[in-house]
Image 1 (tube, rainbow, N blue to C red):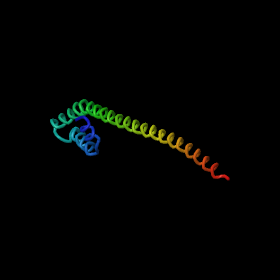
Image 2 (image 1 turned 135 degrees about the horizontal axis):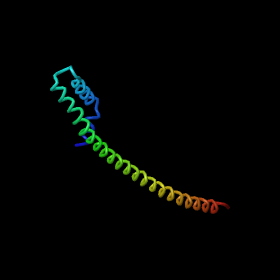
Image 3 (image 1 turned 90 degrees about the vertical axis):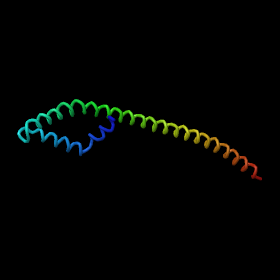
Image 4 (image 1 turned 45 degrees about the horizontal axis):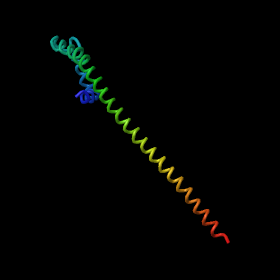
Length: 110
């Protein structure tokens, strides 16, 4: 839920909504009851509650990103070890081919 809220709050539409809330709180623009409600929403709810929810959402997203990075590292490490094994096998194969080639060239000589 925190990740979903973080994604919603991180949009320009939410920024527009917060700007609208901020302008309705401007003294003298509308009635004092609406101004008090707007001030409560912007100071208490948005700043205290939403801030902590956003931080939780960012922490969850960060943990998921760390897991993806770790999986990518493990995949790359596995590919590296496989490549090293293939390279060692090919080097051994090259040595054997060179021995066979040297043997065949010595047998061909009259």
